[in-house]
Image (cartoon, rainbow, N blue to C red):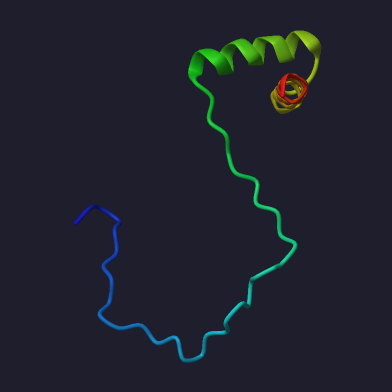
Length: 73
C-alpha cells in the first residue's frame, strides 16, 4: 500500500444518496489543454510580447486556423 492511500471497503451504503443531486444540464466543462514545453515557452513569450495572456493568444491562433480550415473545405 502506498503512503496516504486508503483501502476500499467491501460494502458502501448508498441508500440515502440522491441521484442527480449535483447534475446541471447547462454545466460547461472546461478541460485542461497541455502544451509541449517548447510550444508553451514559445507561445508564452509571444503572449508576453503582445501584452496578452497565454489563453487569449492560443484562442486567437486556433480561431485563425479554424477559419483557414473552413475556407479550404
